[in-house]
Length: 73
Image (tube, rainbow, N blue to C red; front, side, top):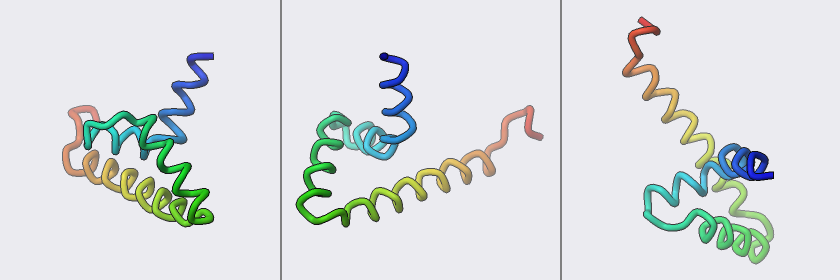
């Protein structure tokens, strides 16, 4: 069961975990406030979540492209 939980937290909630690491704030609290905000505003924070997820993937791709490892040269 813990494997499933960690998979879900890393894959689905990667944005909240990343924000928690950067802001030094528990990711579970960020998820909780995100869920509250989503219900209170009828789902508009989902757009922000998708934009942040896209930006994180794009940033990770840029970092890999700008500093390739020895095996990628």
